[in-house]
Every structure is written in structure tokens, then in C-alpha cells.
Length: 169
Image 1 (cartoon, one colour):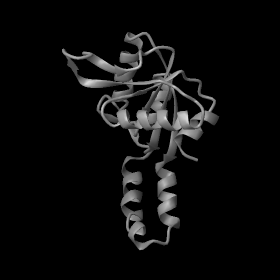
Image 2 (cartoon, rainbow, N blue to C red; image 1 turned 45 degrees about the horizontal axis):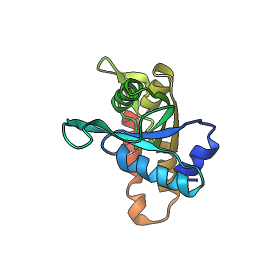
Image 3 (tube, rainbow, N blue to C red; image 1 turned 180 degrees about the horizontal axis):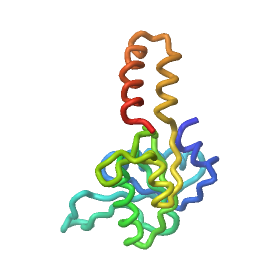
Image 4 (spheres, helix red, strand yellow; image 1 turned 120 degrees about the horizontal axis):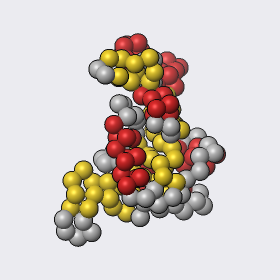
């Protein structure tokens, strides 16, 4: 099941989408389009890394940020993008409600320069208080690669397993 349908059955209540620059921008737009196709029309907004002083100006683009805002991004690494998004959403008058990501890399978070005993996703859920919904996890990817008979894909099993061993929680 892909992201928009997972969102609709997830129980996450949201009024709009927010795509952090840069990867979150097309993801939020694509999710908004697909949700509309499925009968749930929600507005979306995104941020610019640099404020414009002409045209519509500012750092936020799109619908006015309001209500319960779902952050849409590709992955969560250190949680920096999520923290920045929360600050922007709250400053604009919205309430961050959850984060939707394409892949949970199940990667160790860092705390004061050291590996933490929790993942970056767990950090967002526990420390920032936002639920995180992922389409897939690194374990899902590894299982898919291991079960696939395509030799081109099976070549990635060992590197992904090494990555999981090194960085995984």
C-alpha cells in the first residue's frame, strides 16, 4: 500500500501537508495530488531555504499554514529538518501533528556527537512528540532484496546488510 492510502487508514488526523525544502516539496505535492484523486483534497505548503524579497516573498510558499499540519519528507536523518519544520509551522500559526516519510532507515540518532540507543524516528516520536508513519523500513528493503531473484538487485543485499549493521538500531 502506498503513502496516500496508508495516510488515509493511519488514523493520523491532518488538515494540510508541509514539504520541507528540498526533497519534501515534490513529495508533499505528489501526496496532495494523490489524496485529491482518492477524494481527500488537502492544501499544502513548503519552505524555501532562502527568503525572497520580491513576488510573493518570504520563506513559505503555497497554502496558508493552519490547523493540523502533516510534514511529508523522504527520510529522517538527524531530525534537523523536522525540528526546523516544526518551528516554521508553529511560527506561521499551524500545529505540527505527524511526519510521513518514504523510508525509515532505522538508523541510530546522534546525541551530543555520539550514537544514541534510539533511532532518528524514535527521537522524533519520543523527544518531539510527533507520530512518524513510514511507507517502508530498511528491514523491509533488506527482506525484499533477499527474496528477489533478480541478480542485479541481489548484488545490493550485502552492502545494505553492512549499512544496517553499522548504522542500525
